[in-house]
Length: 96
Image 1 (tube, rainbow, N blue to C red):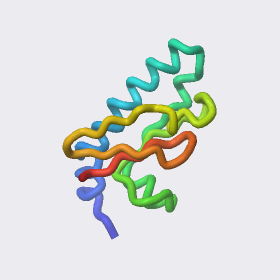
Image 2 (cartoon, one colour):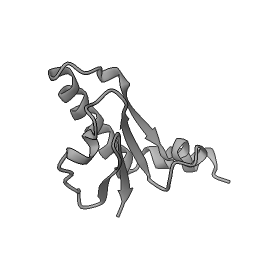
Image 3 (tube, helix red, strand yellow):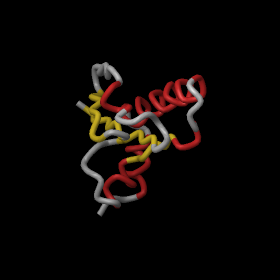
């Protein structure tokens, strides 16, 4: 079982920061196109593991976006973080 310190380290990881930057950019995209930017959420590693959503280090979900939005975005990977469109409304971030 993970300790609180472990979860705090996960929230300070490069993957979580990359997910946060991506979510901010996605919010701007949503506002410009008339979508609800409030439906954009960041899941941290603790939420992902506790709800059995995979092994990602962080995820960005957007329920109100255009159909299959996650699959249409050109995802550029950072040196230390990989981004993968896991579903039509989820982008996962993994430490590499």
